[in-house]
Length: 468
Image 1: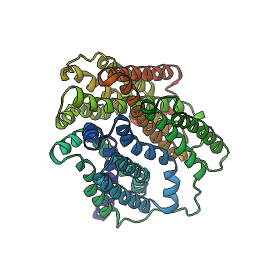
Image 2: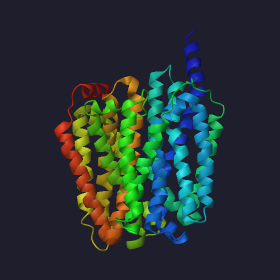
Image 3: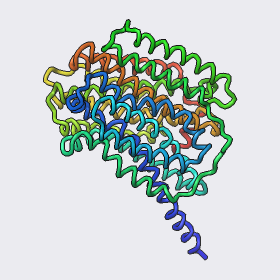
Image 4: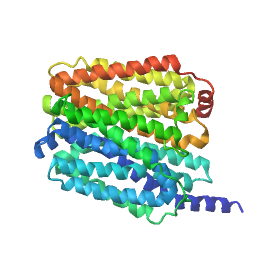
């Protein structure tokens, strides 16, 4: 009799393993493409004849579509099913990655990167939905599966620059996109035989809100990117800012009146919710702006090869992973407020140190910043994630998670856009220092807001009890 539960548990584990592997492959390829392209930017500028604005579009075309479509991806998945959404995402991402690898001009590459972002958006929430469905009857195993899923994405994002450098130096720039093909193929093979999740065919899609969100972000990011090339008074730049303002206001009006909005505005009235999002966007803006600027600085100013530039990011990846692992204990022992303030402060100190970069760009001088900045991020981001989810009713946790991820990606897109603007104004060396100053200002503002507004009470307290 006692063997039966063990056999059942083993059978359940075997049945759910393909789900976990497929979900991890999907999340890894999405996160990998957020960072892997950065180390290839100087090579892309040479091979495709791209200026700085073109390089920004290569990075942000992906991030923009990914960020703006995340909010409505959940409704789409509920409507057609998580398995089908996941397979569509993987298949589309595979084709778009092949198109990236075959691009002959920077315009073709930007278009293919935008398609990558389009298909990346449903993959992340669909993979989570598949995991939640597969482990619905076993909460402890579901928690472990979620931890492994999170770790796989963090590892891919943290090591993307190293992988990019190695591929770039050995196989050329096209390989950083073609490497996605076997990963996507494995994910498709694993997901093909999975059972479908329950569907809601009548689930309403907020098409008006989604369209306005895409146009608002495109107008804002596009205007910032094109300002150095066209000038602030150029009609296209002014039109971009106007489009962002008009569509942003229209988006708020539509969401406030919609019966099923993709962004319920009432969430922002929850205690701590808005401040946690402000911290997330400050960290993402600073971090991804730094990666963009440093990839150019290391190779174009300091004379690093692509592989050396990738290796230079190893301490950054290691510090992020180590801090991420330690963040649970910090959060459980000291609470949300301490973890967020400590993480933001450590990030800011890292940028203060980096802003004093000497002319020779000695790596031993850069190294402390490459430890402090990701360590601060690794401590603060899990706390902001937990705080966002703890600030809302459990029934709204999926929407809150989508909002948080959309905000993070928007911050990344803004960071790259602002970074290019600053580098264009001051050159790579001086521009990098200005990037540091802007990051310090953004993080400092977030520290002030967090000190004034965050309270370890209510949802926060329950979060601490759950963390023990």
